[in-house]
Length: 331
Image (cartoon, rainbow, N blue to C red):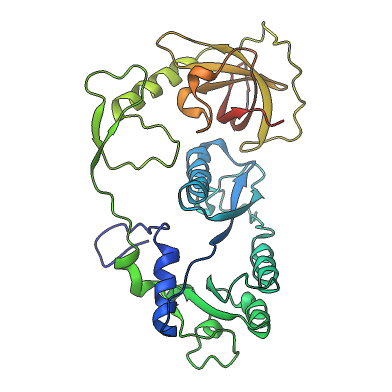
């Protein structure tokens, strides 16, 4: 989002719960403690592989909220039927509209569920702007809970924003996030981190504005350039299915990019190349060091290991597919 004409603005979701709690405390005249923070969202599956980086960034964002800031995250897939994720990138004659399911219902159900649990919470701070939530907000207040609404002026329905609060769906003046931009801004300050690239050259302590999430490895720009070179080299190789791991490979349950599959590590290079190949039921998938999940180190990967992964690109025309978020197979 934009902010005060100063270019792109980034919201610090780590600060958001406490800043909103402070605003409610100011209205109440007493301190409010944050008990839990829930986020309900969606992610794309079965999408055009050209959107893989964008989709992965969204998945990483949800993981960051969960791992770094302890959000309770509930996300639901949206099937794009092989299409581009952004409307402007799709054929203008294509009337397809992605259908987001469960998100609104999950939010409403969770709010009501906790409202019926004794001492679960006293004040619910809902960040939303859709008039459809009026019913559940009104029901929560009838259960004796107080409700605060935080929203954006240009994205909030007239009913929720009504200063007279005639529908009786909130107990405080609406909290406008537009007025809290300075408190909520995410500032990218330069700091030094140790590059963990196995082929890093020179001093490993480098300057960066990147903040790895908990457990995430940091690679400098030079190492990432080398990763990209290795990736291009490996992807240019034709698929080779001559070797078959002994472990049983689960059949493909669905198609498309973004879905989760299982397979067996077929080949892992141990020289300067930091990549390998996974054999799955529909072909071989390339993976690189930076395609591993934060819980799996490259040195712990071994040939014959059973893994789960998300599809970044399907095998086709004699070429390997691409895997991402490679992780140990769930029991």
